[in-house]
Amino acid sequence: MDTKLLEMTARDLVAAGKGILAADESNGTMSNRLEAVGVSASADTRRAYRTNLFATKGYEDAISGVILFDETIRQKMPDGQPIPLALSSKGVHPGIKVDTGAKELANHSGEKITEGLDGLSDRCQEYFSMGARFAKWRAVITIGDNKPSDACISVNAHALARYASICQEQGLVPIIEPEVLMAGAHNAQTCYDVTARILEATFEECRIQGVHLPGALLKPNMIIAGLSCPNQITREEVAKLTVDCLTKHVPHDLPGIVFLSGGQSDEDATAHLNLMNAMDIVHPWELSYSYGRALLANALKTWASGEHDESQSVFLQRSRMNSLARTGEW
Image (cartoon, rainbow, N blue to C red; front, side, top):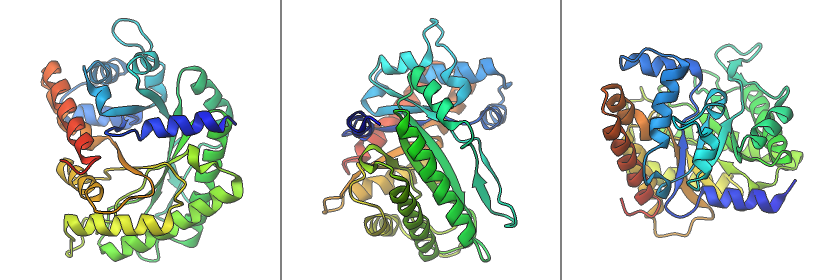
């Protein structure tokens, strides 16, 4: 394990004014999104949409890395250049989603375990040789009646740590993503309590398994009430509770936190990040973003209408707004 290289890459990914673009939707998910805006889905249309984004001039000022899917990392830009090389030539780190999806957790109806550990070392080695320098693994935690169970927390924490250890062994910075879903009627305090549980369990497993935290990043949810909860909290309360939860339950030697947008609106995701970075305190880690839909939803609609240049402009504008939120200046 080259710890110095891992640390350098992790710091690059949370460099001042920059965040990560999550363009790692599976083929099925990306196809559904294309069809929802009236585009026939295929490998070619998925590539055309994504390569249009990656050709945007100046986005590298706000984007430090791009998470790719297995199909995308093997594709080429219109000029024949491999996508990972096109990204790295702009100073943008190519990343890769390495889990194989969340599946039903045996004997625990309605709960999930993320799979993909089998063969992961070989896959990471191949992805590194293709230019990837970081990876992502997402665990999903549902809040509901008697959920999450201790079993769900335990197995997902173990898998996240095992993934992180394997990635680092092969030279990839792991993004550790334990996502507490917004679906449900739970209040913000319940979200806080469950988030604290999964964070504590995950970092304890990371300690046991020898994960080098200065060469890793965390991609958590923010502390937000469930979508169907009648008692929603303010943006200021979201920011305060999120920072409080993370400060108490995330090791301070981690270089950065790259938030997921998790179903928030574009503006909410930016506003919450902005408020956290505008606080009159010094955070122990960089607070950044790893957004997908919050950066791309409007860009996709614009691209589907045939306005490809305008789609790039929309993507660039959203990226710049989140870049400003990195310093509380949005």
